[in-house]
Length: 104
Ligand code: FES
Image 1 (cartoon, rainbow, N blue to C red):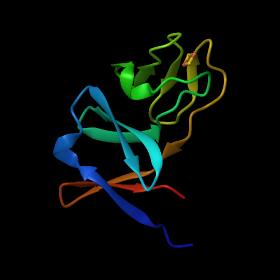
Image 2 (image 1 turned 180 degrees about the horizontal axis):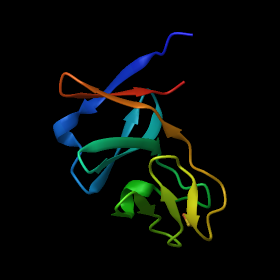
Image 3 (image 1 turned 90 degrees about the vertical axis):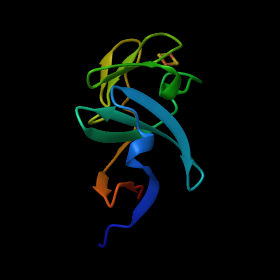
Image 4 (image 1 turned 120 degrees about the vertical axis):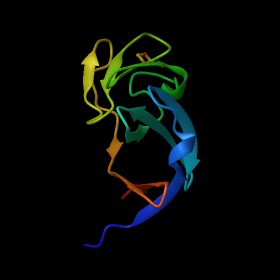
């Protein structure tokens, strides 16, 4: 199956060691800048109604602003309670100064 890459943002719009939220094809997505790389997950926490882009990024971990649960932004896997379910993560490709996501 061919991967369908979607142009989501300029690479320069993703701050290093920080997170931004944006809507890509109707989906609420969080983009994380870590160590010169960009990672992408769904923006809504799997524990409650909080946007991860409003949280605190430390290394590869995003801390939810509501109850301080944590996810690894590389895989979406939970790393700290109360979150127990992974947040969906998406493949990222950087090309031509743009951030491309595979959302399917
Ligand atoms: Fe994110 Fe509770 S809503 S940890």
